[in-house]
Length: 423
Image (cartoon, rainbow, N blue to C red):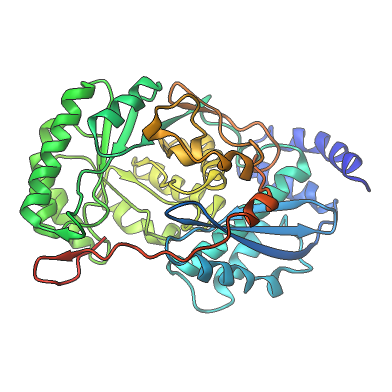
């Protein structure tokens, strides 16, 4: 069957399957897809150097010519993730790509070793690509297969630099929320009192500049000790922040519980948590106001959806972590579209394709070429629901080859005595 006939045959069945609620829609779509006799024939990875970071992509190929695209970017570990993705090829080849839940369970559970940023990011990249294949096969956007839209548009916040000017530009672009970073080391040196004091002062300047009608969040990047986190969050209480992101590390949830008891500042965390099991404890204990799973790390599209159901159960907000490419962006949009608890989504200049943006928010021009001009449509701080079949974005291999992988390392932050600081 040629591609045109293949697509037209599947459209009618897809329309019927998307009119029923999740999970019935996904079940009916999977049953319809079974008749298409799709089989996985191979995998390929691409690591693209995008300036100060690298992106890790995978493509899954099928016997019907459909190709799915996924992402599992992990800063400073991109080549390792790419190899972990390819470890799944011997398991996947010959299998039906529309058996997404079954394949996810096999990738997660069969190898015995599970969890962590590398293994979960590899599974996430593969899983996103599988959903892309299913959506293309049925001729509908992925969110239609997850139960359909829970909203008519998706609120975004723009991740900007730590200056009042950058936050003002976000407001001028129509965004109703932005995220900044004011917990900044001085030449890799973290001086606790100075970092907290100056970080709080800079936030005060931002709030004064933008007024009260722009929600402002701040990312602490896990750089604060327990004492620093308590000091910082209590200092900024009067600023009515949307949230302070990663004020602590997650090894000991007692630390987060202590901070929670000391401040009324809204808290957020979760970009370094994996799967629904990683989120269950701090959701059930209401340790934060916003959870931030990352579709590229937490387990992929369906796992992000399940985490969203967990958040809805405990009446928490979902604000997915989304600093990577437009592949991550589109995957996150599909989940946010269908998840009642998903109140806002992170956006960066590099994955938003900002038009007519000020210089400090402009992205690298070739990013448009890398994704064939495709990506999210954002107007006045809200993303439109995806409209293209599948994920809604493709990767140009020729452009990717022009920007090959270049190893990079995370900054090596230290305290004044030379000891290693967190990040």
